[in-house]
Image (cartoon, rainbow, N blue to C red):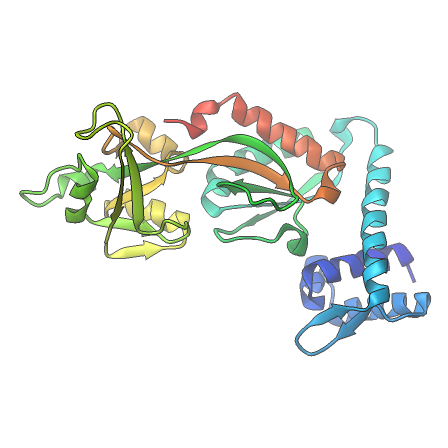
Length: 312
């Protein structure tokens, strides 16, 4: 039995809570993963996991062993990485998570340039518009947009996401007679709004009056909008706006190219919209990973030198 390999497998099984998930991850059969953990238990002479048809639970001995094994696996990985001199020789997998829109539009070009600089590195890019548990999914670094809870994750701020009212020229040209472009939040009641339900605000859109607004600067207004389409996908939201199906309340980075060309325009410029911080986050045990540090630095440096990515 390869004890280190078995230990690594055991750690991932506990983190993911599933033999089948680790089997998919390692491109192995579920039976092979189960046998590897069982062999480790025989080697140690103790039961580490209690298995049922629906769940896994650590025994008391398993809890103690898991904490030590996870730390040891991370230290061994770093020791191996430290033997490779120079950043250009970084190697191995980095698992990265991000929302679909941000991953496709902003992260993929940086993944490409990072791989060109480090040809021995491999990237496993997981795109999902919902919440991902970094430890459970074995993610090394994730892009998080919004305020971070006190989760114990290692975080580095890389920018700010600005939400704005946006519409395609086709939608504006199709407005029925008597319906004007929105100037104040109340005007949105007469408009077709594309609702993104992937955020906590959903169809309750909040604005703050700026200098040119018809009310006192700093006045907040929240409007509950309606429309014929709602989605939990940033890509569907983007597609609906570009198809002229209605007004979107979306981050500007989702439409950088179209805003620059004038194909998509900002509405209600006298009203300000919420801003959200953008962070790269990693589990604490990955903070010493040379690969993770290099990738975080690469992304942070690229985005900070192109700050308009997140600003109007």
